[in-house]
Image 1: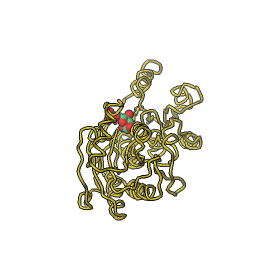
Image 2: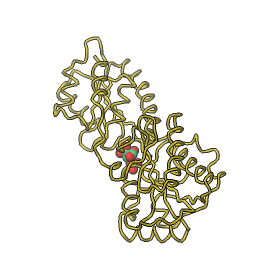
Image 3: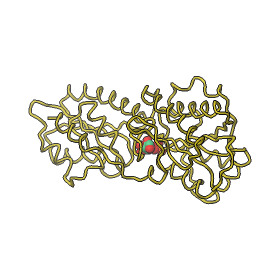
Length: 327
Ligand code: F6P
């Protein structure tokens, strides 16, 4: 194993942007400089590593960014990095720039990329969970999730005004890729009548379940939060209601990319700051190929292989809470 001394740390953001990524960039940069490392910022994720878009960062480069959404480093989903040739070019540029270790801020695909890169070239890589989806294993929270939950909640509050006035059922589609954390918890936070999530394992028809529980007589409007899905998104359920229950007036609202924008919440800024400093601490301790996570309010190191497993469970208790409160 390559135990070469680390002098210079490269940092990049990759995959879908998430509020709090800038706070994480700031924390990694300042944490690194405070501990005597140089920092190289890589633009446009792995794509920028392949195309040599690298610039040295000082503490000033990360001033005044903790409150900004998006990522000042830009981001990309790099197809080239999926090829051995692309990764070889990335490695060659990394060596030319004098980068000894890499901090990758991103979601599942980005950390999977870091894992392969670390294995192929024996490069110390540290991951930070940066995704609104909250779908990385071994961490209670990912950077961006809390802000997005709040954004969805505010949108649903507004939609409820019109839903109530017109006495309609609204199917509101939210992001999350294959995970229902955003849908389930935004439904609880916004007092929705139901959430339709991919993790539902009852095998029951979730629409039947919702209708069957009774859109209470006294409730003339309802909000159903639906996790995005290529086949069974909000449109699918709305069409079904139109056909199967024509007595209801139905509308659809797909929240889309507004969910990824906005100034990060205090929770996300603090999380990103802790995890960013944790990444530097991990490198100082000789850790490599781990994601820095948070569990029970403690910073933890999660091997990439565990972090990217696609089976992070949603607590049954959350499903029960929504069911209980939406009577
Ligand atoms: O992973 C974050 C995420 O916002 C998912 O929730 C969503 O499915 C996807 O990215 C959308 O990606 P894009 O911005 O490339 O359309």
